[in-house]
Length: 119
Image 1 (cartoon, one colour):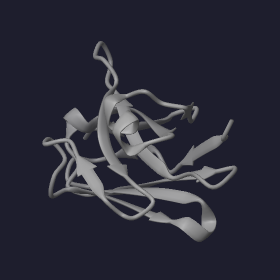
Image 2 (cartoon, helix red, strand yellow):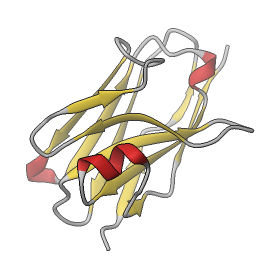
Image 3 (cartoon, one colour):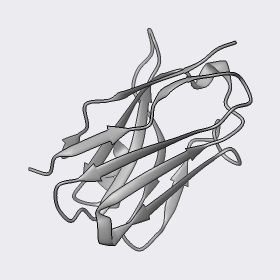
């Protein structure tokens, strides 16, 4: 099973930026980021296939960008114009197919990193 290790979370003011990173222990085809806000279900934020196809939640389109470095087995989430409603634990995820990644049928989860947007 692939091990995923996230980094880059923290506290930021509204309108600020953060960059999350997720390093995989092996070659992973389909990766993404989910988040879970207090009292809410875990939801897909962004996903990227090995070929570079991407999907975003409507709430983050135009503000977040997912990218990957296949040579480093690492995926990134650049988060700009952050809002208080972006607060939550962000989880890196990997799946065997892009369809299952988007459907939440995840093969491997990271440990999660806290993102707090507050003044």
